[in-house]
Image (tube, rainbow, N blue to C red; front, side, top):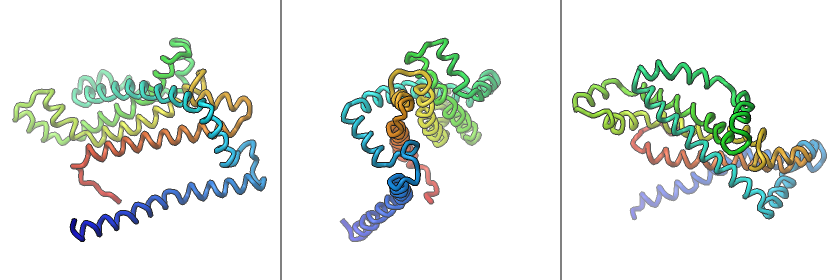
Length: 267
């Protein structure tokens, strides 16, 4: 290995540690201040339990197995809802993006449905599908559908029209045009849509589980709220935040691999 490569790797090590330290500086400072304010009675522990109390609640839930059981149920709901909503969003985004007739037929209705808040359709979903898994998965799917649909549609429409002309000259079939031209060119927008859809899937899960559920992290939070067990509510919030961050990080890693060809500004 050359001296230059060793120097580059050595420089990358401190650089990563510095970025990690900067990332932890703000939340670490907030936690320390929060603990001190709660410990000395400046803020109410009933409304804002200290990080130590929240940590104790987390350990108790984790050791009893309740946390894992509820999280597993919530994660399965998110996966099913995301696959359903994002899959339909991708297919319809491609259809509307490629064909003007599909846009005129579908897009006005879809845009109207997009404006309906998820909370407004919860009573209907409960009436139609009950409080079982169907209503929860469909609420999550509704949240996941529109970001990917819109970003796929816009990504296709942003493709240079000259590339379509070249594909017609080369005699590409419609399937080959989609796989070799449209999807690669629209991939940055599609991956952005995937990230937004996955994030909104977790938000849709919160809505579904807080309103009509007998299991899951949202139900655990709602049950704790009734008994004024505020630390457990904060544990649920932290779990949702951590799960969203981990899933977003995984999508960003996948995005980095799929878009290695794209020379973009890194800041």
